[in-house]
Image (tube, rainbow, N blue to C red):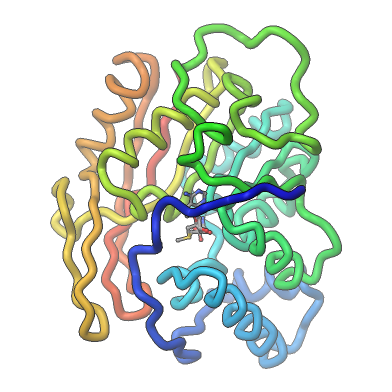
Length: 295
Ligand SMILES: C[S@@+](CC[C@H](N)C(=O)[O-])C[C@H]1O[C@@H](n2cnc3c(N)ncnc32)[C@H](O)[C@@H]1O
């Protein structure tokens, strides 16, 4: 599929030099990559991963690529993961937005989410091929649709669905625009994506994703992203390797209000949030793990 994709938003972190010493995988993640790639030797696995990381960093110098964070599945660590797998068994569509090299969708397939109902999407079309190289796979787990979440032809704001859309479900293998999925997606996952954008764009993205969600009770939007170390809404500033970076963060409270009352009518959804702290290649990040479940 060829689409002309112009990024509207630049990565927030400038391209710092790569540092192999940041490579780290938990033992269960090593086991996951061994199963997926069939590379059993740990040193050979590390060499393979670092080769792909270098290629990915040339495509887009995100902090999560430099810190190897893109390897760690986020979705399977969320408090709602069992619920998501259950939704998968019931036939729900899973959309992973900002899917990068696809660790989350590959883990979901391994854990039983039906691959034919999975859509991974990212502004960087090159990540599809790099994901296949990383996982030594000949195909996508489900399908990959490239696109910019701020391109209205690809994803525009629409009101949350109040009824099941009429007509047949579009064939997701030939889908070109996420707009065709309005009101039809049972599970939307967005990790380390919202914090790339300013407050206005975060609201735009939340409204657009809210419009894709099925109105069926239990339909869910979830993810993980950075919030301020103080957990207050506002601009966060860090100095990383001598460079000042700033980004906008919601607080757990403002994130709750955004979904329950702004994107959705008050009382239409249940918002749950948890926090943790990680070090992303020398950058201290406080993470918000969140879910918005349709009631
Ligand atoms: C920081 S990475 C996080 C990747 C992955 N979700 C994770 O948690 O490891 C952000 C991802 O969002 C994608 N992205 C950034 N801006 C985007 C946009 N406007 N539309 C779609 N994807 C975008 C990037 O290409 C990148 O793969």
